[in-house]
Length: 275
Image (cartoon, rainbow, N blue to C red):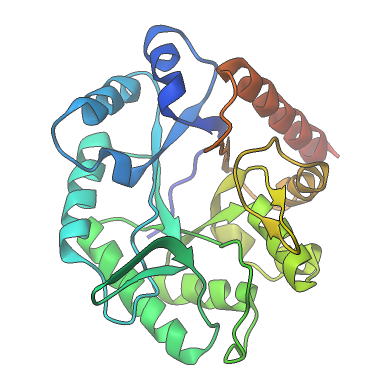
């Protein structure tokens, strides 16, 4: 089935800004929420999300699907995510190309995968099961990474392309993650973008990062960096209608600062698409 499209600019909905989103007219086209924060059917978070949904379209972004887990997916997780999606009717449901769970172990982090045939079979089987269970196509996000596997025999973009071809999923293109991984591993970010199936991109993430001792770290606690803005402008000249949003998960500033940064995204996109 064709992937739905949506063109607009939004923010991640975070707790410090709940009141403003509920009580004022925030100038965004959509919001994105972390799925796991709202997967309990009752309680205040779900009530707040229902109220926000009356004002804005919502995208669901997960961090616990663990599509790379060799032992398969958690059926209870899929059931709860399906219930949330059926109630909220989101623009998109997305998660990460990563793994976090094994029997008796949960990293509570997004761990990288080797890019080879064995991992590809696992990811495609899990993703197909997830899409069947949810009754909708998912968007897969490219990860930020700090290590590579000697077992990898294809690039990350080749892996993502093949996953999309086999499963029919869409892509959530995190531009900051491309920059972080490119710097950490000596990759060409323009070649990375060129190798992706850009016709499958339906959403774009922008975020900030920090300099670690030897690597860039995807911290989501800083404004978008100039190099990421430049790469974003390049991407926007190549993709179709997309939902663009800014993630901020730590050192969260007042909402007005994030809205000003979102205006920068609008300006970069407008200039590049008009060129």
